[in-house]
Length: 472
Image (tube, rainbow, N blue to C red; front, side, top):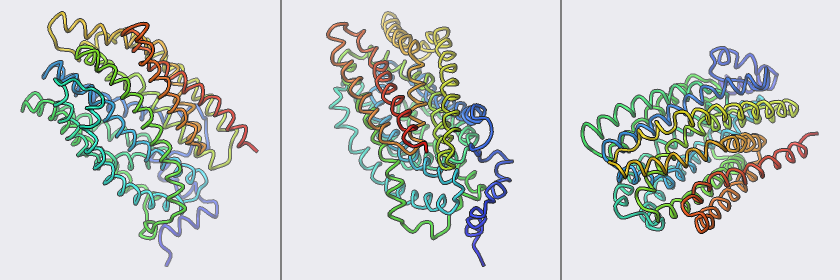
């Protein structure tokens, strides 16, 4: 008797993909981007991702608000000192799993269920190895990296404690990213949203309990984050169990060298891209640390809003990558071009709305992070508000960067986005090393904008060249 997976593979080969996935499509579990309006499809997929990312940023903000108000400015600066190293580790995890998702989407668009299942099976092997290596390396790197970054002595201990606990939860975080990448690759943006809603509610409740109630301080915020990620992982696993095309068989777990090479060929460049960007951020952090605790606290407050600034850009990025990868698998280049035009329009409009919101409400939001008597509190708020204003003015550049990078990744080109990471690194480092000599602290505020502009220019040119090269 044929196994269920063999029956599905046979039917796909006979052109019955739509019937196989009809129930799942009707339930809204997965989405076929090879049909329908490109703009509508990208927006409908991106909206739940935006809400999910917004909830994720919400519990990051709550961490910051509770720590800043309940523990103090030094604790807030400790979170800031830990930011770029924690972002680097997160970038490694999301980069690897996001790269894998590109291959899943291409197989989905081509209607090849057998290869879809095999790619997921081989990805499981890579992820298990990665979580062991990454957890070990991250824990060993904490103190050396913080010392290299010239972390102020009065925030060093808090940063080490926070990262020790946070990195102990790497296996949970990596498995969540692995599961959510599978769902997004099939066009399911709703399940990651629901997972983030659950995680945010849990995190906010536990933050209040651990930090304010039990007085665990910065350690309580880290523990709350790990437990919240565990909740989101369990939710995604529950959804995956209900999607037939994601059910792998024992034979799918037998290593296939060629498939693993394909997976790593997509995942590793995105990992390196995120690492390069993080290194640039660490250089910025090194320079900022030399300006004292108040300047670090002000930068930290704005960086916690950075997630709100780019929340829609990240969502459009995931949506565009899935859209392009599915249509690339189907060989429909005209539809890819229409989708990118629609994505650019949506991204520009959204960035303008977010910028306007930040100019209206940003200062009030920043004040929620800061608990310090005058004049210290006013100084920190002034630094944070000035930085936020500059980023808000040029936010559309960041949104274009995400769309073009996502388009290239969907086409299977993860090398140019990695090169764009080098451009970001060069621009960011040049800004913080050169501009302060002429403009003082003011020069530091322009590092991010310069990094966005350099990377966006490279990615835009590369996308049009790549499309011209690939189209028959």
